[in-house]
Image 1 (cartoon, rainbow, N blue to C red):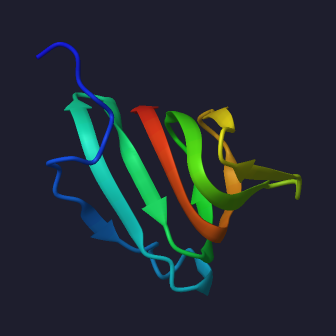
Image 2 (cartoon, one colour):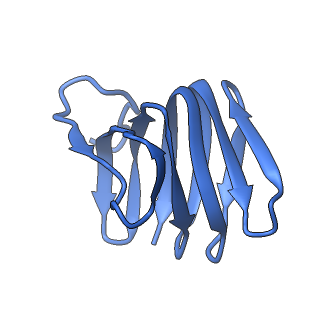
Length: 112
């Protein structure tokens, strides 16, 4: 099939948590539905419950927020609020924190 819907139907989710060494607050639970995995390309949906953890990107990621409210804070302290309808590209080298204020659902495309 060359046209693949980006939804959760029929996909067994992966459940994870941030590495304890990166965790700053709460007990966030991440649920990931990987729709596409081809070499260095990944696409799917990701959801997290509230919490805060340190992040460091070494890949490109396109995200679109479908629900919830999160805050990305870069290494210089600049905050970017992410809410339903927002779309961003996170470039390799981005470091800072990801804080989920309200359970957040996003779709993503990652090029590693």
